Length: 446
Image 1 (cartoon, rainbow, N blue to C red):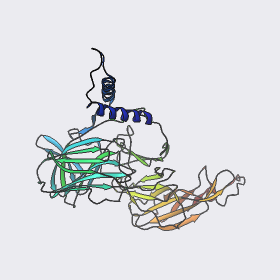
Image 2 (tube, rainbow, N blue to C red):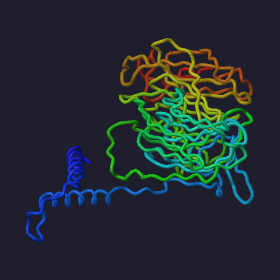
Image 3 (cartoon, rainbow, N blue to C red):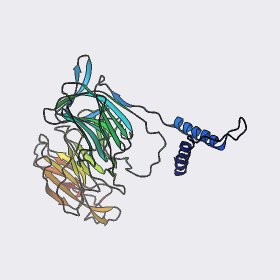
Image 4 (spheres, rainbow, N blue to C red):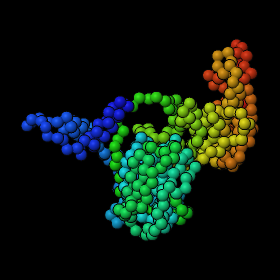
């Protein structure tokens, strides 16, 4: 709806509301209506026509867990529990999940049932990889509404309720998201209500379930249902944002159905059904790039062959190494220390067989100097012996490092593959390549 149409709508509605209370003076012939009555009629007709055109709410998501866990992105702390004749979702410890899809959901109503045995639960709403989430926490002592935006930056309580919520008892929850307003009912009683005036208000995003509180925290969930107005198909025009489409690494997870792909500039995308469907999995990756600062420049990813829950991701354009220990559900930054103005494009990771703490990170260092055809770059290799807590620079040279290979019989011997088709070595003279050339000259290092 353009600005002229909006202005006309508001003007007509205002005039109708005023004129509905005006009693027209009857100075007209039988069967003839006054201008006031005509305007009343036209205004009511306008409102009715626009009301009929309003989009209708539909079911956006529902899960009673009778068919398993296929609708969720889950870490390893979740399972299905049979309670009587009913299957419910069980979360233990610090369990984190998000519904597959829903990144474009705006205003919606989330309903569900929960039972707290120990600890507390979070219902996450308007959750997105780029901006963060709202979360409604429920504890045996009450409930609260908070915001996490950007990720790892938490607000104080936006709203709070203090009162008993019994454990080992099923409760119902209804969360209404309408523009910036969040309303929460627990057991059909209004407990939380707040309009958020935060400048970066979270306007859209999916839902998630979380168990928190302690290592012994435990809770059940069931009958999750989301109702809202779907985003109209084909009504949007791209005006910016991550371009996507530059797939660099494709990796298998624990099974052949689990796949990860780096897709500049939409970050890490994950599939749990062998590539039939994909969803972004970037929570915790804070590196951003581009004019709108919404591009997620993940360039390389490697799944630990010793433990498929451990995944490494490297960024380009902005410095960044990230590690996930729950198959990409969440990420933690473990970037090596660098000089203030230094940029390293991480192109790959090599994990030592049998020891996930020893990892090599390899990449390129842009020089900002043009070569004969392509940019000139240097290369570097880092090593960590403690899973990314600290790093040591073990090699730097005049060409980028694409791969590091560990000798299968002697892990003290490393091989590095240097160079790639669209970069020039910093010491390149672009002379003709001789007919007889050694492995060292080709760019292999031992």
